[in-house]
Length: 349
Image (cartoon, rainbow, N blue to C red; front, side, top):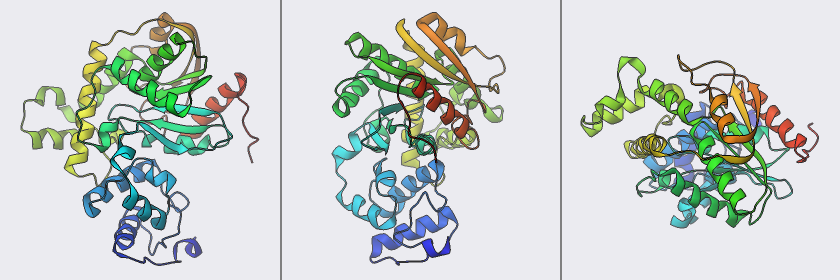
């Protein structure tokens, strides 16, 4: 590994700043400007932390796809200098964009970021081109969208710019599964075929129960403190959502505030939205370990809405199902579901 990280030192001030951030986050030194972030220990959580640190310390706004498409210091410095506002407003984030594979679109959970799927994307890189769908407000000052119907309309339009016609492969974890479901309904109503709708431990009532459990951590109810001073709200939010890693380590207050506002908007959207029936199949990848005490069974929710529901148990609880060590099992189940529906994967090495 030392041969990989010790070569090619920084050539300018921006590369030097990026090198220092990488070394602090990855706890390695020195890291050369051509070392690949993910090959030397980076993952989805450190990628989120990197995004926060870059904004805070360099003054450059890092697009969510930046660390995926430019995973070395040298390439990232170029991407930062050439990034445009339009890049940051696009909800489609290519996490693995191989042109010869079917495209899979996975919608963000609460908080709005799609970078939580980085590890899942890497596990599925032999099977799909993996596109995260994230809230554009994570990287801008625009107010978050509260209405699920409007959000789904925006994401449908963005997906169809990448892929005008189906079959579409769609998915989402937790709250993201609800948006993916609505996207599938809208595309199917437009006459487009849905190849896979993957609901990763998701359900409307269930997701709301998970959020309430998470926000009542440490014996303090965040929702009851919404009238508290802004700084106090934000600090409480950081503490109570730490187990879910919604706010990346090193995030400044501006990014934490955007994630907080997106989460509150998502909760309001869940309360106001009524899911409609879907004339098609959904696959529920259900975490085996319960997270909420009185668990509202998500399987019951989806059986009432979908004409066909397939349930696949998978490892972990609601917060850990997409992270190590459970993500490999989840990816294996998704790969099997793709093959069963005619989307052949490349042979695994």
